[in-house]
Image 1 (cartoon, rainbow, N blue to C red):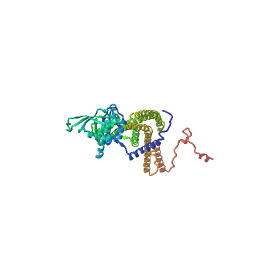
Image 2: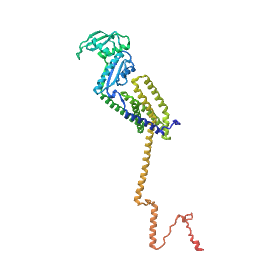
Image 3: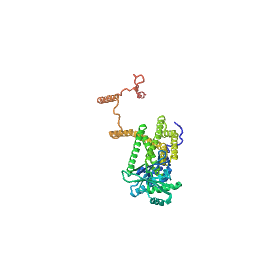
Image 4: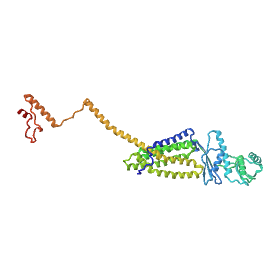
Length: 465
């Protein structure tokens, strides 16, 4: 292991907890006040697909949508930037729904004018209802502020009645007397607006709001399954408290990402679910790498304190974590800059989530694991220390109750001592019966070292003197 700790992350964990708490509280306040910008996937709406005759850019399409004030999801371009896919809002209110229908019709006209080739010598209107007369054409030109002689009717063709509706339609060919591109577009828009005959959408569907409710449920289920699976995996690979710390760090990442979506007014749509699940996967991967190093160092060094081992492990994996996240972020920024508006919100969400995922693995998950491990060690120490003391107190109280508070004597004396006491008692009884003084038995101290001579009493010399 390394021997140098550049900064004590574990014992300064309160700094990071307070910092993260402030960010999370700010996000929660934003979610409560201004909530989220929900996309069509959650609110319901319409899906429009249009085929252009030339390559287009998202900025061109966004400009038209902004001009017509149509609420929509980011524009998607398909098939070599020739197919335009748009998700617009929808309304349950009849008046708002009718207004949206008019806007979508105007959008269709704008797409035909901007994204289809207009031949001024042969400008065609396909399948219009009713015949086109000169008076009706002049009325449309006058309404648009254009001169009446700017358009000439070249030919009219009658189509067979439709099998479904039974309505007869007409194909009309016009000639535009102008060389200005802007004026040609203006004339085409006026004629389309009056008579129709423009190219329809390649596909047009409605998304019911019920679909958004179902999508929310599935998103919740997906995140719940992911978190539960991570909890089981980390518990089996490491231990339960490490798993709890990892899951709390994931909750931290989700809350911060949600808060940024609300503060920055990023659109929450189907891609948002992908952002959250990707952030969860990236964050738990980084956390497991750090936990693996912690476990390895705990096995190698069993003498150092736990906070020292954790700090060493964090600094050993710090360079790996930072380099990995920087590599990912550089890729995300490149896509964000050159990828266009359609994936901007998605990439911003990824950038935020992955950055905070790396942060939580180092400054949240590891300190939480340390706190849980220390709490568990204290609990075990208290439990192990209480049992002997309880047994000792219980035994002492039992003895006191049996002896009335007095100290107990030895339960049994040695067998030789009992026999000597019994012999002494019998001798005393015999002496008392005969009236003689009891004789004092010889003791080892009464010999002079040879074992067969008795010492004279000290009082003998005194009587001779």
